[in-house]
Length: 257
View 1: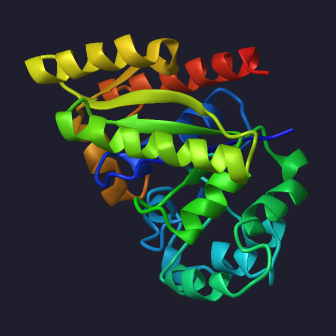
View 2 (view 1 turned 90 degrees about the vertical axis):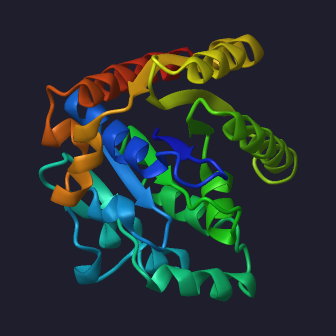
């Protein structure tokens, strides 16, 4: 049975896509079968996995409108080592079209149920807004991984996200929970980041992953080559941190109910 996780944060620019593709590559590297679902119309997770969003014959848009299955629409990202259910600008139109459809928030869940036996992990890259697309992701997931920078405004955004997850848990998806908070773009030389990191650990305890992703140039360069940082430069500090995070993720899932 596949474990389905949303990589979500209502604040933009916190490294959601970087986390999604590098965690996927790290999991693939340690022998897991992984599907990345790109729910952002910008298609950054698609391009960052080495898949050209302009050449997609079928995308997550077709899956949401139930004109294609995941098996038909997925593309294998050869170098990255995992499958991608890609996105492009068409997806922006799905937002409007879904509003009038039945089971509008459960379309992705139904599609993923059909592909359940094919994967160990499904990682969903959500857009920064709480849209119908994000709602589809959260309704189909077992849990949420929250990448966040250790900055003051990030704490405020986290409160909003926790409230959203509670509402969806109560009304639409009883399985949904926060799996953990991942500290990203971390620079231990900055006192504020250390303070916020300590606040996170004090408030959320073991929900904060032990793994910390450092601010790393090689991770930032990798998308321009259409590769996750873990594949682009496996020896870099950022890549090594994501491989450790992938191992921690597998271990944490093993202890989940």
